[in-house]
Amino acid sequence: MTARLSLTLIPLAMALFTPLLPAETNPAGTAMPLAPAAMVPVPPTSAPTTGEPREAGALYAQICAECHGADRLGITGPPLIPENFGRLKREEAAKLILEGRPATQMPPFADRLSLAEAQALVDLVFTPLPASPEWGLERIRQSHLPLVPLEKLPDRPLHNADPLNLFVVVETGDHHATILDGDRLEPLHRFATRRALHGGPKFSNDGRFVYFASRDGWISKFDLHSFQTVAEIRAGINTRNLAVSGDGRYVAVANYLPHDLVILDARDLLPLKVIPVQDDEGKTSRVSAVYAAPPRHSFVAALKDIPEVWEILVADDPLPVYNGPMHDYRMGEGTALVKGPFPVRRTKLDGFLDDFFFTQNYQTLIGAARDGSHGQAVNLDVRQRIATLDLDGMPHLSSGITWERDGRTLLATPHLSKPEVSVIDLGTWETIKRIPTLGPGFFARSHENSPYAWVDVFSGPHKDAMHVIDKQSLEIVATLRPEPGKTAAHVEFDRYGKYALVSIWEDEGALVIYDARTLQEVKRLPMRKPSGKYNVYNKITRSEGTSH
Image (spheres, rainbow, N blue to C red):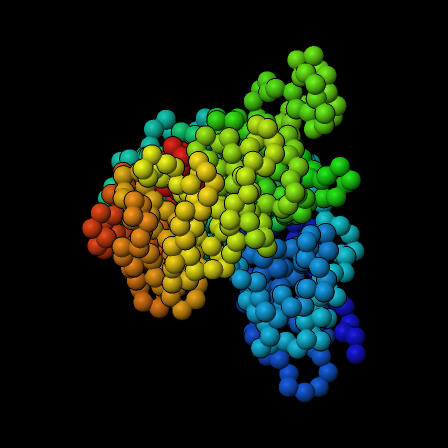
């Protein structure tokens, strides 16, 4: 029997605008905007042993809506609509539902669904919505929330901590963030954020402001001098991450839905430009992520469904951009000249790149596809691949780190689907060592003042393990277990490299702080699933030991 494709949808207007709840008050009495209310969890369902397959709409509401939204436009999970499936083939989708997707939050449902029910869900989500969701420049502008006038902000910090040694700790367990003093190792302030932050917060170039992106497209600007949210705007329906330009003037937002990039004014978050993402034939693409490339005065975007890399120039007077044959740009001798602000320089590749790592001078990016068997080194100046790298097993390149060894610059990256760390010589592009680990890893971190690189295991039976690797011998010298049986992940150092902070990635979790030299625990702070912590100084100076 073919399951009926019925699903009660929340009206689109309600889905696109999430109202603010009444303000929460911190101990100092300052009002703060709260995150949208969490969806009410639904009771689990189990696969029937006999009888007809259950109806697809009811199944979706029971097991899919909590992460992907009752409207199928995504919450913590991506939108489930045909225009967002990209490379996912219909015949592969039922297998994905039953078996899950490794290294993501998508669990397997084989114990709760029959094959026929999984296929019915596939039929449902591959059915287009009655109207294609849109979120253009005018709707973005209408969502703008100016909360604190810039002229009302203080000239200096209203706290006595080193403003460059603050940590921003994202607690996804209850959608809050904590500001931590990196010298005293004490929380200074805790506040509600938008639901389901993603992609890591980014800082202004002076470290004063931090910007957050939520999965449902909300961008928030927070002042680290006065601990208050300055402005918010909804830049998309389903957002991957944001980046702040090296000069601090612009914020770029990468969207899964719509398929576009949005450029905001970093001062007040007002939108400046929406850049549709499509190739020469009109095929559109989700944007996997956007990164700032400060020495290049640009943003660089990874595209999910088009084998291209996009570089968006932010300089006031950039060199002319030609996405076609060009003889002499000084004479205007070329085709496909891109005009207007924020021109896009497109580099066409022979494969998809889902994830990037930049060399320290930002001239070359190293990328890989999640389903690929190798990586590519792409020179952004000559706009072509210059090397093929031996990288399989879903390398998590955006979490890669570099250091110097015997006069050579090395890159180390964990892998999301195999238990090893790959170490690559960036001069020869050769893999010089594969370091076996206890399981697939997600994050690698180090610091210029530390002899060690820290790599988590993150999943599997040894998810509680944290490896410490000597950066010169390339050997594991210690394996720490901050809390046996609980996931240990995501290390960040203070600005001096004195302390290493490890997350216990659980709802009732903690920050475990280690002496980075002796590897002894110094302190433990309870937190609600501290998914990431970000040191102001390390981020704005683009430390080689952290992600950018």
